[in-house]
Length: 282
Image 1 (cartoon, rainbow, N blue to C red):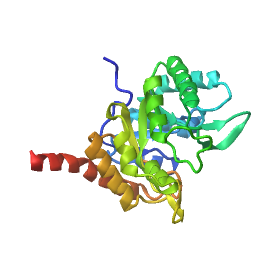
Image 2 (image 1 turned 30 degrees about the horizontal axis):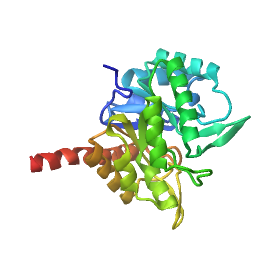
Image 3 (image 1 turned 90 degrees about the vertical axis):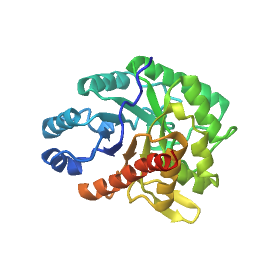
């Protein structure tokens, strides 16, 4: 039987340099796992390298990449993948996820661009994911991304995502906030999207805050607290697919560690809710 692509449980937090000192000096927090962008730590030396090693010894560590550019027309960066593999092996990284998007062509685009939702793209991306998995000797977990335009769309985002998961035999990082953001920006039903994802492929979840630019335009910033409709969508996700490991993302306007732990406590309450409901009806 294959190993799970994300062998963690409970609630996680993105590791940030802003609070790594406090995190390592204090007693065990209610943090079941942590996540980093490998690009931000791979070349690190000195104090931060020692702190990162200490964090990896204390918490199961996931990597969530930024620059694989799985949908790019440019060839995969094989040297980068080999460096990733060394980094993962050195620090016992338990899983690796990336965005179902592209961020480079002839140069870096500094944003995550949507891949056209077409059958041709499905085949192209699935082949590249298989290549990545062969080199890393690990299953890749891909994340549904927020997007603001859908150029060349021929099939639905749901079908596009499901077909890639199946054809590449990879897993899904289901970002609940991204589903909510896209449902507002593109006028679809968020619960229908959640319901359509294959339960057996969902490795873990992301949840985050965003910025309301206008009534029908939300920007996915990871720079604010989570809002009620996103909490409700998280609850719906648990009720639909079971209680899945969930990570709180906060990339900008980073508050105190205690504030982040408070938000994680809310995730934990929602994770306990489906079990309580089951017990009440059992």
